Length: 100
Image 1: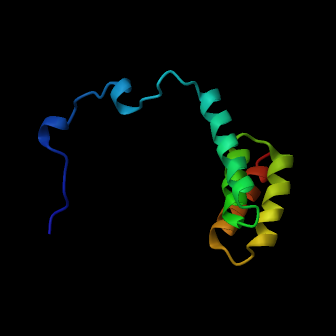
Image 2: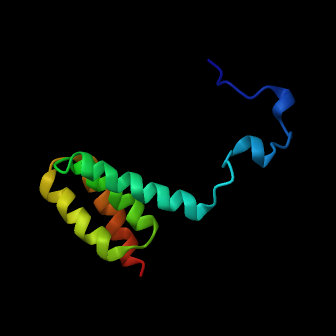
């Protein structure tokens, strides 16, 4: 069985940035601010859900907000010590702080 490939007319065709990634005028700072709000809202909606905390920690790590990330990853680990995604995020967090 052969693997699917792109149609030959796609090869070498440039894709305009406006088509590939629509930002509707938002800047990276806008997206970061929005992501942080969504992450915090996830915790507000269910403060017993370890995945909400892990999601928020991923955003904090991307922003290099180490103190906040430390606080929230500890909460995630306490709430969901058996949740694989919590440990995945914890690993990313540890890898990030060791690079300092």
